[in-house]
Amino acid sequence: MPKIGMEAERRRTLIAATVDAIHEKGFSDVTVAQIAKRAGVSSGLALHYFGSKDQLLAATMRHLLKDLGDGIRERLANAGNPRERISAIIEGNFAPGQFREAVIAAWLAFYVQSRTTQNNKRLLQIYSGRLASNLTYNLRHFMPREDARQVAEGTASMIDGVWIRQALRDGPSDAASAVGMVEAYVETQIKYHHDMSALRKVARMNALQ
Image (tube, rainbow, N blue to C red; front, side):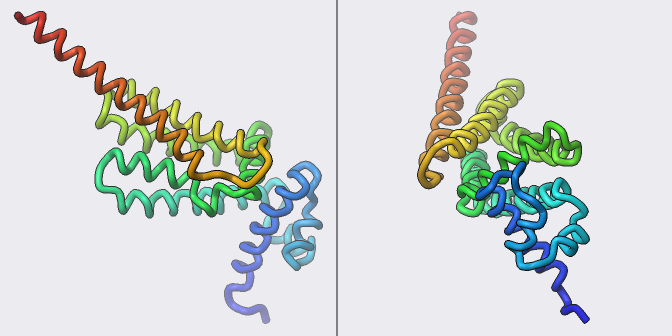
């Protein structure tokens, strides 16, 4: 009789093995058999739990997305104002558990598969939409709504771009540098819209004189 919780533990082990196998071999070349061997289970059991390699990747991405969301929510709970919440979102996207070579490789596979696999595309759209929405909500404290949407899209694009650049570089990931680049962009945008708002106020005051 299987131990209670054994299936959940095997699923977690297979997901961890998937991340490592994609990093080592790439998604196209890795097989379910190789993933199962790395996880210490049979190929039949892996297919029993997940059905196919595509479904295993989708489960892996759901797991990574949950970890990402949990980490961001934890940081947001400790943020005291909108600017700190923006930083919490940025830092959460480069958390140690996420921004490491093996996970970066898995995310790139996820992006590629989303072009042809509807389930993966839906997961990516949920992630992208939530990221843009959370950033927009907090950026609205510093600029008009439409500008906040545009800056949020720019910030999200920078986060994704830094991930891709990290995948192409040699050497360990540098989360501090990544966070710094995105923060610099956000700070520049906030300052620009603050200055523009001040100029508009001066112009209105001059017009009334």
